[in-house]
Length: 323
Image (cartoon, rainbow, N blue to C red):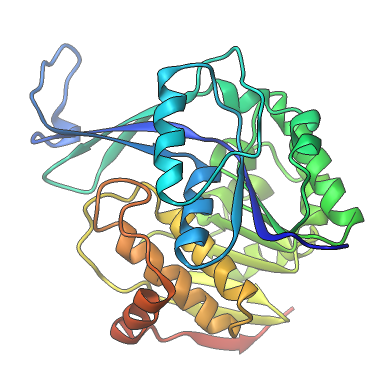
């Protein structure tokens, strides 16, 4: 197959509204009226976040995400142009563009997120076919509602044409379980999720990350990465277990950290870096994004990432997989 570009990023495109307040979130009571310290509006969603990150790192990425016929969609498209991205989905949904409101406290990194799903649940197999997909990789973020059937179509397409698939499910999707996700997992080359999502997908409570990695590997993915916020990140690749503690940085907002990490990891794989440096690239990107508000602010170029990797000095432990 003739590959025309590096990555097709499939998932949602959202308009994110970030509200920062002075009061601790835990102190808020029903009926309270609070002053907002600052408000920012940025595009978000798994498809646009990942494509922007990959583009900044020098890769040719395309976006497949369904938008509504509204002002929010226009704002998202305008911001996508800043990252030299254009949508591959030409049709619009009658449903509103996905949106979210993220409320965080100036006093801590706590946050509350309100999400409204709309157009992203209206992505069809026809939308995918019309995108003329010929990428080296497909980055598949969360698709819910009737769009999940499209996700399965995409997975089957990737498997049949030997296109590598990275799958990055949200908790909403992971909790559906292994049977529900079987077709996608069997087509997945790289699976990236956090510890809570891994436990939800497997319907287990164990905190043993090595066990989680092996159980996920048995479902089909070749490479698995499990993040855990500020706690240890673990990965399985080529029968080896990788583990490291994320470096401590000043956290302003954690929205977008997962997409930044996963995109950095994928960029390293496409550039054929060794796996340890792929993890370092992902972590450097995530560590930069969480020091700013907005899921795309702080994304690193390759040159900036190399400098950050050198500065962060992330030590990664590697051991043989113990089955």
